[in-house]
Amino acid sequence: MTANATRRSIRSLMRKTKRGESLNILTFPTHERYEENLCKTGHHFYSFRYGKEWDSAYAAVPSNYHIVNSIPESVDFDLVLSHTSCNRLEVAHNLLSETTGSPTNKMSIPLLRHCHVLPDVRFDTKQEISSFGSIPVDCNSFISNFNREAWGYEEDNARVIEHGVDTEFWTPDTESSNAPLCLSVVNEWPSRDWCCGFGLWKKTTQGLPTGVWGKCTGANAGFSEAARDREHLRQIYRNSRIFYNTSLHSPVPTVLLEAMACGCAVVSTATCMIPEIIEHGKNGLISNDPNELRGFLEILLKDKDLANKLGQEARKTICEKYNLQSFVDNWNNLFYNTIENYTDVMEVSNENISQPI
Image: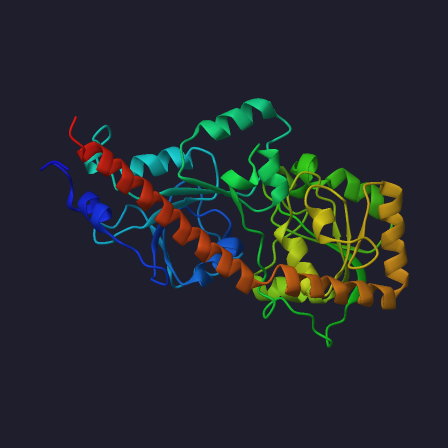
């Protein structure tokens, strides 16, 4: 370390974090309800305003989530978390260095990439996968085994943390109407047919009672509206007998898990990770055949008892396998493991540097 090093870079080298201590994590606004759950780990998240604004319609900003325009000089950071593999990673690398090209000013903290998406089939997926692996990070994690494998990673070089749902908030309500309609919740649905199956939905629901919620802008403004807030969305789930998911290229939609927790009977495409969550005939009905999907909707619209049974099993699945406590515990383990592994590597590197030639 030279005399030109900043106080922040020196502090980052000296900082020792113990398990159980509250961490200071530098991140970017990405997925509001996901990050809302992430804040329940108890750490402090400093979210650098870049590329996206937090939308309070999806979730209120938690008290330990601080949106910033620059890195606070007074905060000793422990880790950088990026939920995407886009140019935010480049921004993260730049943020770690006070002066570009000056390693003495670099904050010595690990960079963790948590990937929510799949390679985009509209483009050259081989090139996407190659580019993904070329961006330097200290740890990779994924939201499912399915999308980890899609990016070419194995269990020994990447972690998986599946979604967690707040099952104390997302709950059924016996006093709600549970109306016989097919609910779908998708943002910008008409323009996202390639991944969200808008055409499939239109084909399979013609003449059936439906309810569609989700933000729509531009040419599609007016097709559907976003729920006013979380409370409103919860009531929408509770008032719907069926949740109909037509996603084609998403590891697992968060709204699907929330609807399951609220006791909706699920009819869904059997794509990506969904068959790992829904066992056909037990906690939902799944198929990739449009005629079968249409038939499932018609059956559940007529058979309230079957819908209730599937909805109860759906909630049981979320409570047992995708509960918030497991999510929080798994994230805390990942945070501390990433920091500890990085510290071990840095100590070995410094020892090698200090050895006489």
